[in-house]
Structure formats: structure tokens, C-alpha cells
Length: 174
Image (cartoon, rainbow, N blue to C red; front, side):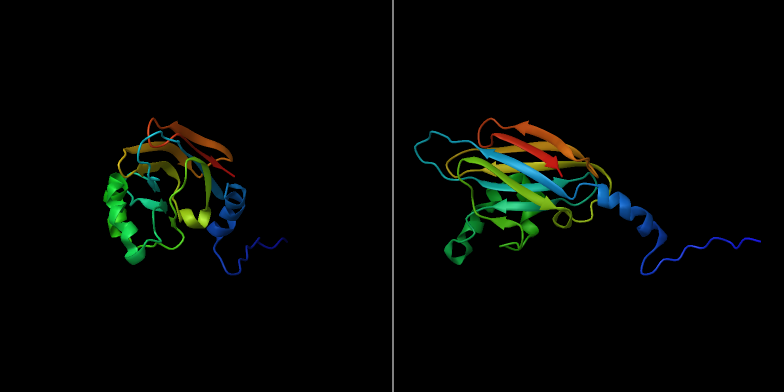
């Protein structure tokens, strides 16, 4: 006579145990490469840049904001509202400097930033859009959108090219 098979889980649930191998295999980092073009203008100011993730029906998740955060009396925050789309979807409800999100403005060139699974938060599977918006004093404003699927597969995730305030922008997963 054979005994019935039993499953014993300590400190978890069966669904968590079954999902663990899938999570371990899924990429844990999203790499974003942003190019800020060198502009030949009389008065150049580094752009304020916001990077966030959107999913239809869910609140936007800001992952980075580059601005003059070290100005005295927090004066750098005064111009964050010029990054208009981001300001409307999540910026106005944030407290600055935002821990783990705030960074200094960047000089012209290519910049790579990485976001861990923890920084991205608990994103449900589905279709998402990475949004990058740049606004510059005495300059213009530009917004780029790159759609991607979560959970992502390792490798390239998408790319877009700006025409004025942003150059090439790409995302990849590892």
C-alpha cells in the first residue's frame, strides 16, 4: 500500500513556491540609455529630465528626475513643473528631493541608468510604456514613449529618437 503524496511548505504558499523559479529567470534590471544632444545655442542650460513608467488604468511610477536639486532653499524644484506631462501625472504629488529618484541634471552625452526590480515596484504582467520627458530653460521640451512588455525577456526592449532636447533613447533588460 502506498501513502498519499503530501506537499510541505515552510514560510510560504504553493503559488509563491511555483513562481520562484520563473522570477529568478526573469530579468531583474531595466537599463535605460538617454542621449542629451549638444545644442549650439547662445544660452545653454542643462535640461530637467523625468523618466517614468505608465500602464493604462494604473498610477504612473516615477523612476528618475534630474534637476538642480542642490540649489539653496530648494529653488531647483520651482522649474520642475516645466516638465509638464510628468508634472501632471505624478510630479505635483511628490516630495523633493525624492529618495532614490532625484539626480543632478546631466551634461550633453550618453547616460545609462539602471533600475532594479525593487525600484520598479510590483509591476503586474502586461503592456507598459517608458516615458522620458526633457525641458530646458530658454529652450524646448520633448517627450518620448517606448512601449514594452512586463515581465520582460532579457535583451533589447525598445528605442526611440528625439529631434531636439533628447537624442536616442533605448531600454534593455538583463
